[in-house]
Length: 125
Image: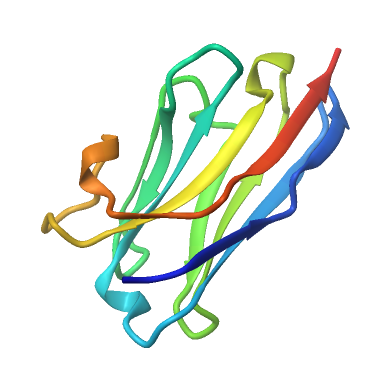
């Protein structure tokens, strides 16, 4: 099990940028692929992005491709999500997640066992 703590959320105008961080505890960070999900009010939690254990492979939802960048620093046990060109529809609570049940990063919730508490991102128009 790994404990995850997100930070970096906030209020930003449309077109602006934010960088989310997710600090992980434990000694086996590199055994986990990591992901970001988000949940808007009244909607299901949806996949945003995921990154492999090494950081060499990344995947994005179509809605954020070209605007968001996922990365990880294994030495610091930290996951990042750089969000540029933000839109009002990006408003949601953003969650980081850790998983190791699959050999490659998962794009569905069931592929992740550990979740952070979430950080609010609000994009005003």
